[in-house]
Each structure stands twice: as structure tokens, then as C-alpha cells.
Length: 244
Image (tube, rainbow, N blue to C red):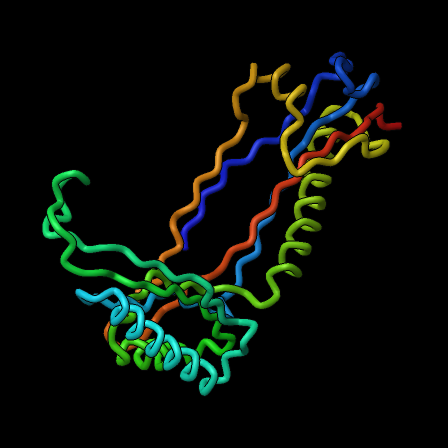
């Protein structure tokens, strides 16, 4: 996984004072960023069971029968019931000419009945075999295989703390060159402070971020899960004064 992040640390001149709720004493506005990357330790499988038949009832019966087989298979593979979602059912008519406009597609020649499934596999070593077993049932169409983290919430908290530390470090380095120091924190926000951005940039962004798509692509022998990255940014206003 490739990731490109362009950062900016904005230090306001000490002569710039508050308007519209901003500090009425010298301050510095800084953005802190962090990124934590880990290998996926769980996988979410997203797939559909699809049946096509001239008779809608028969198409539905086929889907429901195989849906039962899917649920039994997942249970046999120790996938917890709380890690399986199978709540959707969709039925659509098939027409003689699917490419034409709705008024010229001709008569109905059959029906497509679909049930959607989502299953979390918490042992990544087992999911390739499970995928093969699901496909062997027939009628299963996969839409995604996504790597994930079982402790993502903890990683988000850790990333937030690292972003706070990064903001403090950037502010202190900037102020040191101007003979200033941090007195206290005036405000913390996960999004930019619009009043300051408008003053400095006229509403334009000071930084950009570009993230390459995370792609889970199989080769003939194995599946290779992309690393999972948790990013965090935080915007702080520090009140400042001359260093003694």
C-alpha cells in the first residue's frame, strides 16, 4: 500500500488577533498527523448467492436452499453468528433485451433472486479454503475480500495520541525559531478551524492528502492481504508568549 501525505504547519504572526471567537492574544495554529500500519488479522467476505430461473418461486427456493447451506458451512468453520450478516433479499425480472430502455426491453423471460452475505473471518489462515468452499456451492458471486483489524478502535486511539504529540512537536519547533513558547491549549479539533484558514489562505486548503487504493488481489496460489493503515489528524490552537 502506498500513501502520500503533504503536511503543513501554520504559525500565525503574533500581531494577528482574534475575530469571531479566536484568541485575543498571540497564538499558533498547527496540525498534527499520524499513521499506524499493521498487517490485517481478520478478513471480511462480501458475496451474493444468485439464482436465475423463469419461475420466480423456483429461483427463490434455490436461493433459500443454498443460503441454508452457506450458513451451515460458516457455522462448521467456526464463524460466529454475530460475525455473519444475511438480511437482504432482492428479486428482479429478466427481460428479452436488457440493454434497451425500460419501455422496449420486451417481455419478461425470468427472474434473478439474490441474497447478500457478509462474513468476518477472524483467522486469516482459513479464509482461502472457505472461499473455495463457498464458490463450490454454485451461484456464489464475490464482491469484495477486505482485510481488517480486530483492534482497530485501539489503533485509532493510539493514532490520535500520536497526532497530538506530532502537533505539539511541530508547534515547539516553529516557536523556538521565533523565541516564543507554548503557554496552554486554546482549542482542539479534528477538522480545520475555518476562521484561521480563511485569514491565511482565503478559504483554500493548506495541505493535501492522496491515498492509493487498497487492493486485495489473489494470485493462483494464495491471497495477499494489503496492510491496514489507520490515519488521524488533529488541529490545535496554542496560546503563546515570548520565551524567557
